[in-house]
Length: 216
Image 1 (tube, rainbow, N blue to C red):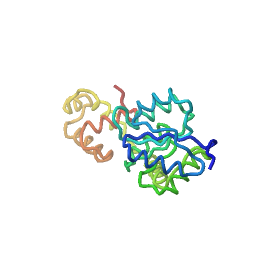
Image 2 (cartoon, rainbow, N blue to C red):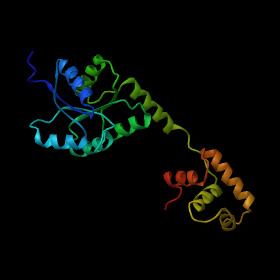
Image 3 (cartoon, rainbow, N blue to C red):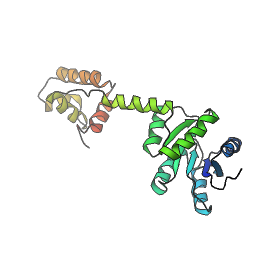
């Protein structure tokens, strides 16, 4: 079969045996040919410069020495946004999925994927520009629903308390500043801990900073 017009694939994975097996599998697909594999992000950077052709798609692992998948994804998004990246890993973690997608990955696959689904993922990445597996779709939906959760409503005095809690003042000093009793301040503190589902002042401060209630 003539594959001179095949779509070019690069594998980035530090496990040589897996990479070699994956290369044979991808080469068995009708429209794809593996150019080479790199053992980590740094190795990939060098080969993208020295090899004569850029790939259309990179299959990228996450856990690698020297320069891991997350660092590599950020670099690729900044320097080669025209190359589509599919993450192929054993890491089944929602936070990592979202992080890689936010940094430019076009899909997130687990290494136990069926060969037919991998072929489909490569095809759809070329035709649609991305491939969202059922796992990714659920992760994105979960993230969207989490963002849509109603944010708590704060009283003016609660906001004042959170802003002062972000300072170096003790709770007694905050009570004096707000002209309230320490017992009342304890009530504000516990109510906010419950409302925000945090366990300590650090959690309260992080929430206040994240939501621009206070600024350092």
